[in-house]
Length: 280
Image (cartoon, rainbow, N blue to C red; front, side, top):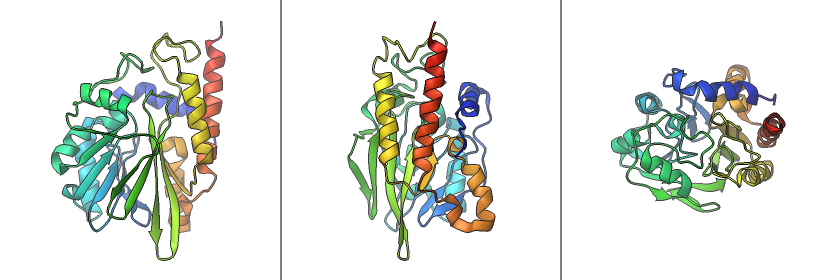
């Protein structure tokens, strides 16, 4: 996997100005797992006959697109039972309030991200404090904790603390099965070292554990069983290249057992570059 973090950083910094609410037609990743997000921000639907799970919700204006994408696949937003959050930035949490209103789903976020979702903006320990866009607040949430499991019928997700980009970042893993084949699916949170002007990951009083958090996150993703990867920003894990390749290769185009390790390696390199730039 090529290192895509430099262009991804540009997308993140320009995010409030981008038309991120539009996207491609929804498509199946494998078995009961589908991509229903936009061009620049991922949302993943995991389905079952007793209810569905949605991971991430895009910008506030993305909610209508996500609902339409779910419907285009033959499913209903009203059957979504859980909405899982990666972190509390507008491009991933902005649509949560509207999607919860339409579905009456339980919303799960890390303790740190839950504070951001409740406020509709990030707190002072976030590297993008005062630089990230605001979004409609979410009033009803459950706390998701590292290593815990969350189920809807046969769907069983595990939360993984992968902070650094934000203090409360979560990645999610589950299995999807079709016939006699089961694959390990991973939704990896953002790991880009993006910040407001003047913030230093190497010496932050507001977020002193940033480097330790990044190191932990890299290790988690390097070790996680991972056949199919979707990252919170799809271009950070070459999703669109894999989608193009699926026209010839079919669903196997999305399968790459080394994808999570490559994603962590690219993030590690981006952080090293950022830390070098912070030296006097």
